[in-house]
Image 1 (cartoon, rainbow, N blue to C red):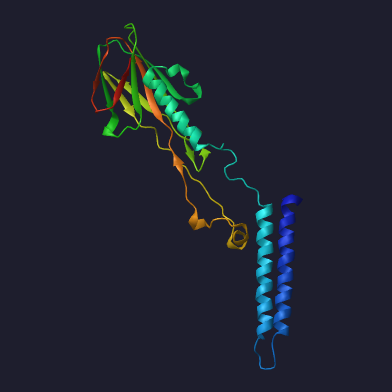
Image 2: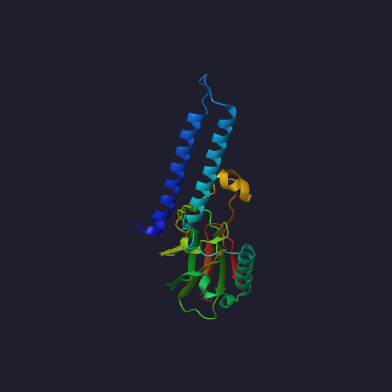
Length: 241
């Protein structure tokens, strides 16, 4: 333990010693002949302990390092909404190239020489990803698929790097779509104690509310000109002209 980390502990110990001395002195002086505490000394004793508690809390809050979410960038909700709308508009218009490559989650290049392809969601799950399909001008027996995802946030912290991409699996004549693997996110929240918040005006722990913004997820596919897609899971497949 270095001296910088040790100094706050010494300060707290010093304050505790002073409090202990004050309490011992007050208890000794506040007893009258009948063995009862004098009211005035009792009030001074309680007030002294409370002031000391404020000092300790203030020191601890000041010297405690804020490690929390320093590795996560902030994310403005209005900007995230603009990104979501821009992605949908670009995909609908067939101008997906205009989208920043940073929003690409994953790419697939699949060889498929057949004329028909079944598209289904594995295990009948609900798929939140929107699907856009663009037909090529030729029959090159190749399917190009790209998963795009705009940024997500929790309490205006960018958590995009903590989420997982959409999954695809081509088996025989069926292209199975699978939701991303679930990511377990754990966040800790630290609030100042009442002794501090009563002066700073901060909300208490129980008054805190969290906000979550889920980024837009789409699958953009380029398929051979005459390939027939057979929708097996009632997916909302939008064809781009």
